[in-house]
Image (cartoon, rainbow, N blue to C red):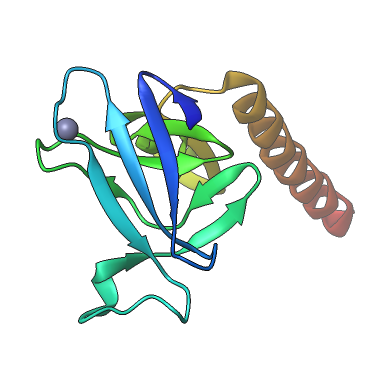
Length: 145
Ligand SMILES: [Zn+2]
């Protein structure tokens, strides 16, 4: 039994000769638990989506998002259960940085922000963009002289 946190536990299932063939997941507040086959040559499947890929056994990391029959859905990364919402929060997305002076807008570039707003990284990315733009303005000044 592997405790993944958030009330989710995983049990690795083996065939008769001791090879891992699948994982059963159990989560709080749900009676069924669910079994998923893993993508190894000795496991039969009818469709590619019948199996999940184990990226790492220790700590357990699965490639695919998995969904219980009750609709409970999430991922297993670094031995921890991560819900879809948490996974999305950890993803970053690009945001353009615009400088507007008297109605004239210049796009300085893109910074990557996350839903949980990791402002330390945002400030670093923004500082790098502003420094690069300042350098460009400075170089343009030199060209005029
Ligand atoms: Zn369930």
